[in-house]
Length: 91
View 1: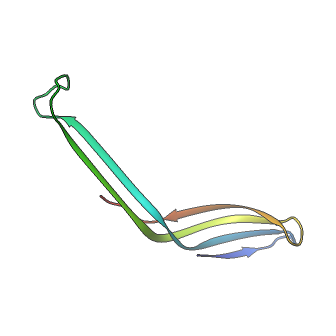
View 2: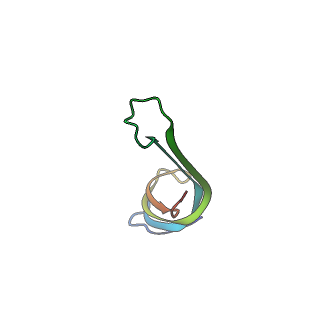
C-alpha cells in the first residue's frame, strides 16, 4: 500500500514521490561442503556438509519517485523507481 504526492507542471505531466508499506516473501539458503579433517580432497572420504534455509513473509517499507504522462483522457503511461526494504532474513 503506497501513497503518491505530486506536482503537475503541465496539464499532461505529473511528477510524484511515493512511499508506504511493502511486504513480500523472502528466502535464503546456504550450503557448505568441505573435506573431513586430515583429508586433502583427493581421497574418497566423508565430507562435512552444512545446509540451512529460511523463508518468511516480511513487512517493511518502500519509497520512490516517478513521472506520469497523460496520453488521452483515459490513458496514461508512467515510469517509476521504487526502493524497498523488507529487513533481514537469517538462518
